[in-house]
Amino acid sequence: VSRRKALVSTQPQVGLAYAGYVPGLIRRRPGLIDYVEIPFERLCHDSSTAEVLELAPAILHCASLSIAGVLPVGSDITCKVRDWARRTCTPWIGEHLAFVRAPGEEGNVEIGYTVAPPLNGTTLARVIGACQHHQLELGTRIILENPPQYFDTPGSTMDQMAFLAAICRDSSIDLLLDVSHLLITTCNTGVDPIRALERLPLGRVREVHLSGIAVEQGVAWDDHGTPASDEAFELLRFVLERARPAAVTLEYNWAGSFGEDVVVRDIERARRMTGTVAA
Amino acid sequence: MSLPVANDDAATCAVLARGLVDPKFARSLLLGALPRSAAHRRAASQIDAERLALFAGFITKVRYNSDLFEHLPGTLRLLRYYGVELTAFRDYYLAGASRSKSTHEKVAAALLYFERFATSVAGRKVTGFADVVAHERVHWELSRALADWRSEPAANLAPPRKCPLRVIETRRDPHAVLDAVVRRQRPPRAARRPTLRLYWVDPVEREIRCVAIDARVNMVLEAIDGHRDLPAIAAAVRPARIAPRTAFDVVASLAAAGIVTIGGNRP
Image (cartoon, rainbow over all chains, first blue to last red; front, side, top):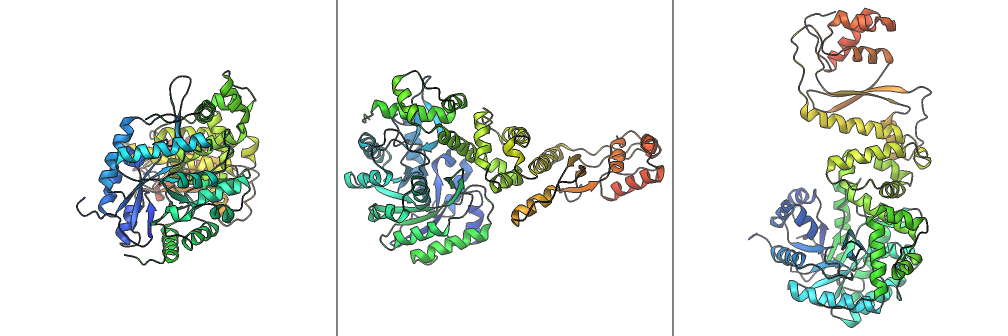
């Protein structure tokens, strides 16, 4: 742990979401990536994941706070997130604008996956309140990730871009812009992705995510098992021409059909776009 | 922490959550049945039940991804190539079969489901699907069998099997089906008659090997039970009009491949 470096840089850093192959890749190609983004849930499930902290700085990603949910998160989860935030020296915690648990007839329901909430004024106030509360509890900044939208959520009175812009307008919460999620949402709602990006306060984007997309049954779906499309990289370019996010993360972390050469190719592509050179 | 919650939002989240974890509820939404509570009924009536079920299939796929990709990569590749991956996982979720926890449970349950899916209308559109599923089941079973395999002692003159093996029938060569998908070419035509394929674990390389065999080889293989010696094997296959010389040659070929050991009674 003593060898661990905090992620500090004035230039956009390029990293990879944790997957089983990542520690080996870092050993074989030192300096290829600047950091590893590690899901909190993976650290809880498999403590050996933390060994990668010896190899690279880390950003903690989380899908357990249910920020946009109607139920408060349990203190046990908050304690664990706080503990891992401290151990990883994460500069911020990326959390989804989503809920993972909800009230049920026989107790609370754990979905085990992030779901986009109703987008309205009440949810907006709740999300901002929850973020501010958790930031105090965790002692770490939280940035919010736009979720992929697969269907219209009843009770919504605004679209996702308006909701994200309102969060930035009404609070100091910054964004984790997943350009692939944005492509999915705009594809599924029939909106032009560039127009959507123009409606976001891109100066508030602290981190960018990239991954693949699959289309089935006429619907675009998130796919971390395929590489990011050219269109996703073009959206990254659009963002980088207008803003200076601190980090660009490739989420190539589902078992997939691409090899290390593709991962390296896309890291280098992202690095060329961010204008940085390998450490 | 006390934060604002609208009743309708709580109902929406509750209905969405239940639809994603309770297959029976998801099926009832698909059939147009609505919950009893007014708020839940209102939320449910505005939810796209088809899309929600597909989302449940997507979540199931993500949960199963790493376990299945390791053991059933060809099956997943075919489903994706033919654009029915989420449909398959949606139906898997709706059937209530997606509660497995360990890798073994997940693969075993998924194989059973995919074998059923292969006979469905959607599954029959996936060329070679049944053959690829059968091929990957054999691989999975042989990998597991290898861990516990103990070669039978050659105490008598019977040729013992040296490794775990399986024989399956396919209409298409599973490797050719998958190669065609990778190359985006037409899949091979189905053979008029099924082909027998022998799979075994190479005892030296510890790798699974596969070869097409004819019915005579299969009969000789079946006669090799660890008790019969060579003359008894030849006698056992004689009613199938397999000459002793042929039976001996088959055993010799199997021995050369490392599948059996010939004892002292050489042909």
